[in-house]
Image 1 (cartoon, helix red, strand yellow):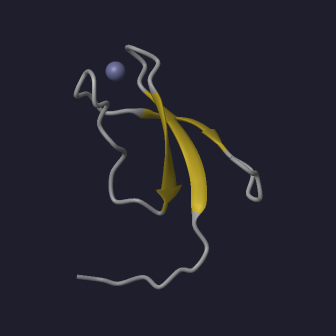
Image 2: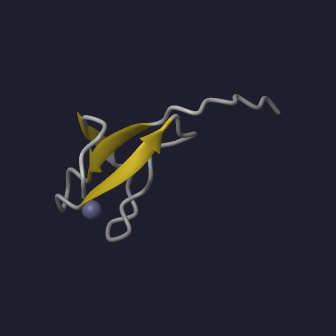
Amino acid sequence: MEHTNRSKREPVEVICLRCRYTEIVYFPVEDLPLCPRCGIRMSISELLDEGKSY
Ligand SMILES: [Zn+2]
């Protein structure tokens, strides 16, 4: 198993195309998450700028 040691991670918004549920994940990620409601693979919605305050 390969271990990449990246300190920089990209926040990415993913969206479920069926129910419009959105979630933030941090790249690199092995797989896009599944929608907790529908159980289908979510799609990338947009790349987020770093430094945003939540
Ligand atoms: Zn969904």
